[in-house]
Amino acid sequence: MSAARNFILRCRDAALRLHRDERGGMMDYLLVLAAVGIPLIVLSGAMMKILTNYYAMLAFHVGWPFL
Image (cartoon, rainbow, N blue to C red; front, side):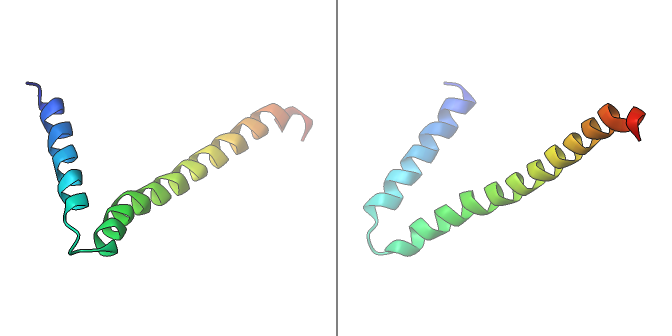
């Protein structure tokens, strides 16, 4: 079995255990959401900066003869 398949199976088993354990309540789901959501917010902010700088570069290169 490949390492990627083992990782996917371990993640699936952990998610199933999280769902079966009802003692933790909503806190477990909030922790999982935070573990996924916070990096996505940071990543989207970084990507927005990159795209903004790229657009500014293109606009400058297209418009510099007219300045």
